[in-house]
Structure formats: structure tokens, C-alpha cells
Image (cartoon, rainbow, N blue to C red; front, top):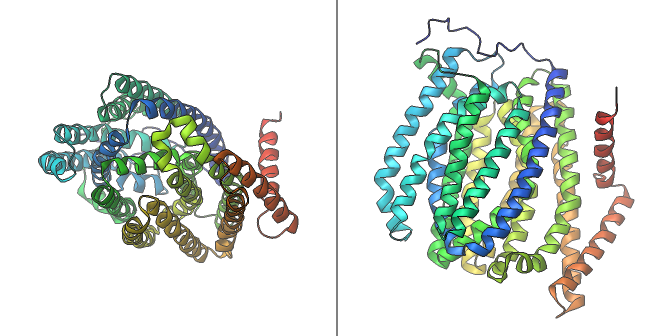
Length: 506
């Protein structure tokens, strides 16, 4: 181990960043990650179009069950140590980083061992077939790709080097898409999805280590583990508990509706996650940026308000029209086998738009040190999804998953905004600013859809969608004319002006 002092700075020896430096780096990071996200969305389109014709709902169902087990292992193997390092005000020392690194590896070895022992039982319980135990075992071993990359990513995020992260993640996405499509074309079924993920994990791990330039040279210290866990365990529980309770989907839906239904739910969730892919750019930059702005509450509150307004405006202008277009779009583009998931994709898309704004609020809760508060809300919301979701599936089939999830997410959004506003006097009435656009535009969307179905009767899905889009456009323009609540078009103009100002020569 290294003989360096425990207070020695990290390898980058980065000077502290001021508020203006953080904002500038954050804006550059948002642009870089935004471009990467556009590339990733292009890859997702290619992958979805190809795989929807090469794979079946049962393949997605088997993969969803196996991936859930691996995701739980990834959460349990972290325990939030890296998040604690990103949040702290001083630069992480070599001992702190190395302690977190070796702790991750030890936790991961334990988790992988447990999953390998349980693999045969999991395969039988979820009726995964003769290759089920092998799929669970391979996914478990792939957790090392995750644990070995956590600290290099933390080093890059701590320095707000998101352009570097964006380039690596784009290469990862290309490799995963190409591998998955190739294996699906070779009739590998669910293994194609597993293989693509493993290739992505292995390639990304190597590239992140090369970019970070960090090696474990510090000493392992139990006192550091205890200190980092004081925050990290609550941070990680906000992911572990919801992820564990999210297991009701393969459990309940699988038991009631079958493995194909699980596949439809998993496919619908992936297709509806486009808003989250776009908003994850802001959310990912927000946590380290908010962490470094905690001392400047005025600047932080304005930054948070602006981010929420602009994300809400963009989503409320785009998502409703996407929801209207989904029923005629899905069977034409992806095939009739996926048309049963159309309504589910609509509900998941609405929920994802709210989760995009919620992600910014979560980042502020974590950055301000209130991870425990966030954990309580996440646990209650996940328990509601479990209970209400099971009842909804019994009454409405798989569509009930989307209905219950959207209702719970809307409630959770209000509660989270309320809690964040109470922690900062400069964020008063934040909950109204957060909820108003979603409630009003959501009501207008419901009116447009209801009118189109009543007026057009038995006409085709495309005609209904065109009528609904026209009605929604008129209703949104009327809303803008009342000048009440958030001006969607006004925020859109502000975003365009901001981008033009940044591109203008100095």
C-alpha cells in the first residue's frame, strides 16, 4: 500500500471550483452528454427496429427476470461509497478512493457468490427453462464489470469531465447494439440481450480506467468505510428498496399473465424511457454540480428552478403528441406482435416525463445530504406501486401496471417537490411550479384523446391520432394565451436564445 498521507489529494490534484466554474463546466457537460444521448437514441431506434423482428416477448420476459437479479446485485455491491466521495466538499484522498474501490470489490464477490448459489432456484421459480440457471450465473459474473468501473467513473464525474464520459458511453452503446443484433440474428434469443450487455460492460470498464488514469495506491481504512457509509448507505437504499419492490412486475405479472406479458411490460418500459434518456443528461450533471453549490443557496435555487422549468416545458410540449402517435405507430413500425403494449407504452411515457423532473429534485435531496429523507419517500412510493400495481393487474391486465405507476409517480413528484422547497427558503412555491404544467397539459391531453375517440367512432387509429393532435394543439395555444402557469412556448424561446448566445462569438 502507499505511504502517502491520508490527507494527500487525489491523482488529479484538482483545485476547488467556484460557483461560476461549476456552472460553466456543467453547461459544457450538458451539451456533450446531450450529443451523446442523441447518438444513443439513434442506436436505440436501430436496435428496437431490428430486435422487434428478431426477438419475441418471451425473450424479453426471460431477460427482464434475469436482469432484475443482476440489477439488485449491482445495487447491493455499491452501498453508496462513490456517491459519498462525489458529494463531499474536499477533494477525495488516495486512501478514501482506494478504500471505496476495495470495498466495492469485496461486496461484489459476496453478492456474486450468493447469486451463483441461488441460480438454480431462481431459474425454477421463474420457469426460465433449461438455460435459466446459466443466464443468471453469467449475468452475476458480469457484475464485476460494474464494480470495477464505479471508481474510475466517480473520478471523472467529480472533475465534471462529462465530455470524456459521453464519448466512452457512445462507443459502449455502438458495441452493445452491434453485438445484440448479431446474436439475435444468429437466433440466440434472450442470450443476445445478455451478450450485448456483457460486451458493453467489458469494453466500457477498460476505457473508463484508461481515461481516469487512476490506480489503487492508497491504504484501506475501516474508519473511512464507516464515515462514507454514514451517507452512502442511505443514498444507496433509495435505489435498493425501490429496485427490490420493483420485482413485483416479474413476480405478479409473470404469475398472473405469463412470461410473454412480462416481456411486453419490459419492452414497453424500454420504449417509453426516451424522455428519461434525454433528461438523464441534466440529472447526471446535476448531482455533482448541486453538491458543489450547496454553500450558495441563492444561486443553487435559481439553477434548480431554471432546470425544472425548461425540462418541464420541453417535455410538456413534446410528450403529449408522442403519446397520441403511439397506437398507430407501434404496429406499423415494430409489428403487430407488439400492438398489445401500445396503451402500456402511453402510460409509461407519461410517467417517464414526470420522472425526468423528479430526477432533478432527487439530485438536490442527495446533494444537500437528505438521502435518508429521499429513502423514506422512495420506499413508500415503491410499496404503493407494489400494492396498487397488483390490484390494477387483476382488474385491467398489464395496462394496470402503467396506470398505477403513473398515479404513484405523480403523487411522489408532489411530495418530493414539497420537501425540497421546505429545505431552502429561496424555493418557496416550488411544488406549484413543478405540478402545474403536468396537471394542466395532462388534462388537455385527456380531453383531446376523449374527443377524438367519441367524434371519430370506428375510424382508424391514424385518423383518431390526427384529430387528437389537432385538438391538443388548439387547447395548448388557448392555455398559452391565458398567461397562467408556466409558459411552455416562452421557456422554449428562452432555451433557443440561450443556445444561440453560447454559440455566438465572444
